[in-house]
Image 1: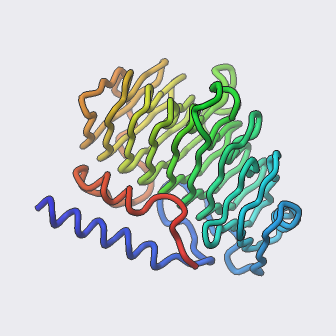
Image 2 (image 1 turned 180 degrees about the horizontal axis):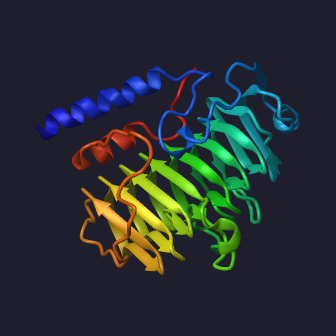
Length: 309
């Protein structure tokens, strides 16, 4: 039975890679709600290979598919407009260049490698925005510098809502993914910050897998390796974690600072869960779970910037 599950899971992952298209829309998680997330689907496709061209192509709110090629270097956060699909092609990499989605809607970011964004630049920063899908992205830096030398790999703050993070590889960094930037921002954040993490892999990331304040988090088939704190639920946040796997966690698998969590079908790898049981037992969208025994093999085979167009 286990072998059959692994084979079927691997086949499904392989088929999903083959099916990738520049016109794909989000089909899993919170970004399927609130009208859905289609990015620049149906718009003109443009290819960019320089920082200047990237900034121009994503700046307005016109529907557009922006295909990034090669390696683009810099030291800034690029503002992304509404109705955009930003897609990497052939190993496309941003080094020191982050993407910032601020007060926008309907954005897709897929198949990019984003590396070594110096503080205060996040690899991807989403603020006051709705319906954002981040899929098959590889986010990393290193742990050779102090924890504040780089900023977050993927941070979702200031009442952002209806977000899906899928098949993302977070690795070799201090601060993984922060949802809700401050304990004092409840007036703005309560009732928002609904985020799905679908088949994501956190490896050699010190903490924040994610760290969630105030909002609602759904983790589906997560894989966590070699972290100190894996998942942190805070300030009344409600989390549902299903069929996920942890190993090499030195402190807490799930830690709580006045937040809550419900775990189903998870393998804690001998780690601890200190979060009180919450009330989030269902979500308003459909999804399919991998068997927990298949998670490392299937997630590992289908993570990061591996899509072809």
